Length: 239
Image 1 (cartoon, rainbow, N blue to C red):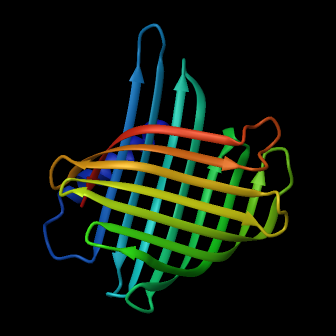
Image 2: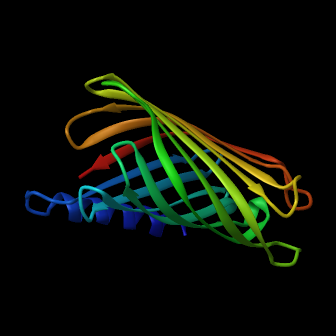
């Protein structure tokens, strides 16, 4: 599954770069990170993500995102995870908006085959300057998940999300994302997802992204750890 993912992302980037320049309502950003070692050890790690946004109007926007992460060591799969999501937001004032969001995750090595989460709520630009933007979201939701060695579970949830962006210069910026999801069925069941990233532009199309991702599950599957971390350097192509 690792090589097809890389090929798909590269083909998408080439196709978009070949499109004629014109005024458009959409944007696309594809990022790819590959590490391959051969010799005394044979390892391969790849991470990819693509974010597509489309403005239906100056108030309504669609975001579609998908990606994956895989790792092999001596031909044996050591990690394999995928996700896909969609989000539609609609501004109700200059700084406030309504949204609905759906996300699917699969991470067998973390103990779950499928996780479907849906939420709908409100968001606000909490702090905005020429160089800073802090956005917050709050929403009730619904989660359906199938864990390995356990029954399928469905329950109501609550989600809080925040993203801070700081323009460091014309060619670089800092991003911090944080998400908290709480089960309303079990107070001990919650998730935390964060990403810290520094992005530096190479030119108008390509950038380099350094990121640290931390995921925490309060009630992991049996024999699984509560925390997962990923440190990556990726090349981003924006169109």
